[in-house]
Amino acid sequence: MATYTMKEAKPAPTANKGIIFWLKENLFPDVKSSLFTLFGLYVIYSIVPPLLDWMIFNATWSGTQDEVVNSGARWIFIIEKFDQFMYGFYPESLHWRPNLVAIISIVFVFSFKYIKNLKVKIAGILLFPVVCFVLISGGWFGLEVVETEKWGGLMLTILVAAVGIIASFPIGVVLALGRQSNMPILRTLCIGFIEFVRGVPLITILFMASVLLPLFFHDGIEFNKLLRALIGITLFQAAYIAEVVRGGLQAIPKGQYEASEALGLSYWQGMILIILPQALKISIPNLVGSFISLFKDTTLVLIIGLFDILAMVTLTNSDTNWLGYEVEGYVFVTMIYWVCCFSMSQYSKSIERKFNTEH
Amino acid sequence: MSDQETMIKMKDVNKWYGDFHVLKDVNLDIKKGEKVVICGPSGSGKSTTIRCLNHLEKFQEGSININGTELIEDVKVVRHIRSQVGMVFQHFNLFPHLSVLENLLIAPTWVHNKPRKEAIETAMYYLERVKIAEQAHKYPNQLSGGQQQRVAIARCLCINPEIMLFDEPTSALDPEMVSEVLDVMVELADEGITMICVTHEMGFAKKVADRVIFMDAGQVIEENEPNEFFDNPQSDRLKTFLEQILSH
Image (cartoon, rainbow over all chains, first blue to last red; front, side, top):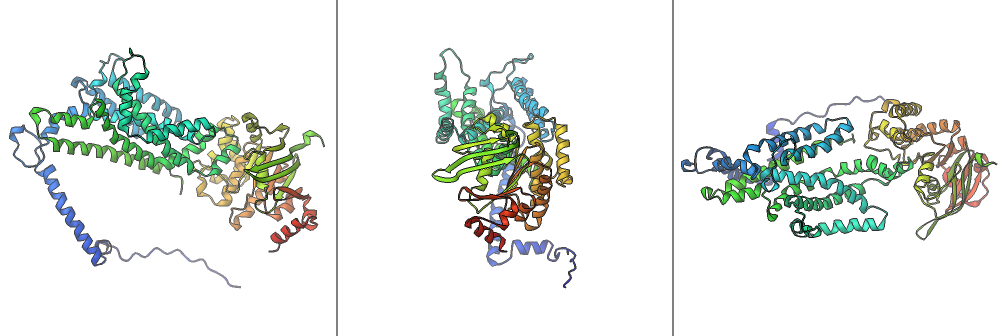
């Protein structure tokens, strides 16, 4: 009878390491690839140095307009108008309030992952928007009231996006569940809503929110412009969330539904404890993708007369003392948008890693 | 036979998928503590039969009575029945986002309102029983198929069911893991729980079944106690079936 001895595991071959080898292997393996590498290097060479020159080395960082001698960016415009970009027309003496909200938000977002106690988590979620609202709008605890007409700039952009994201999420999940429901009327209503909203541009919804919505209410009721925009954006975003979540729900094997039913869980218990946690987990990349496009879409509130950061740049450019600074303004806004969107996508990746139970 | 002794009574159950007649006048009487194995070719309606018992499938005609409760389409009745019936699936259907222990806590804490501490004790007891207690804090995907199926069995036992349904519990397992799952099932059978098992493990059927039922094309063709069933099949259909599965 043949006998076997177990073989020891050997380490993988370690030859062929080092920078030169890596360069040869990845950048210059053959003629065609080498040519492409050289072309790529040329493209980088012709874009990056001039850009850096303009943005940093030849830029003007301080002084007045008359003292500008460099040919690069004149960041003095941004520095001068910085407060308006950030806060719109929010009274200068009260800027500490949005600042405080920003700090609270950052702390909240980053500590949220580490809170273990579910009750503390829920309390946090419920309390957080209230605290932020009270701080920004005032009217309580002796805080001076600031009308929403004065809110603007990056503050408004983030506020609209955050409310849109947070409020649309539960509505979207319920719509997605409704769309899968066995009840024909509920299902038809959900499909009707989702398909209607997805079939029209956000700008139309915002117009409807600002023009049509007041018609449903009695003449006397003053309906806040910002609130109208928020409702419009929330409903718009909810339809997209619903579709993303539906994709996640459809990816859950039938066996998971059956197992939770067989154990005696009710519909809502099964959904909340078993199905949604899994469905939302696989939806995270798409959800964040949809949040990022919402963040950029918020700039459309301009058309109903709200001044987000992009609108503030356009507005400050029409200041007769500061003509001809469009490029600096728009480059600055571009960077702000990029930083915000990139942070969101990084945050989503960290959540994905945390929820990963496939090992 | 008095009513108390009858655990499951299916009477003239008929079911259609659209126009397709899957169950044809299925009658089944199962006493408390009885172990029944159902076998038959695929598509014969054996899985559908046991899935009707806990209302994972609806049936259109006939009646089912589980432990004195008439199975009707009412949320409360269905939940009451499901709280007494455990089901083990072919593909385990553990919840991959929860640890093994959390999988076992879901039903006791949410359906049976047990205090969490007590539920953990029960869960650990059953994990011990299926010899997998040391894996309690792992996630299902970190376990082998055989281990996952044993967790699935423990998950059912945690609700202290009157009846256990097994829907081809070893069909999706690697050959080396079949016996560890069957061992657990044999142990369970010895304890007097009512068991219905859809399986092709004939060795298991001979060892534990009080009765073996053969189904084909949506009807019960033959039923008998195991020795008679295997040694002395009556119908030609069962004879061919047994030849097919026992020929290797």
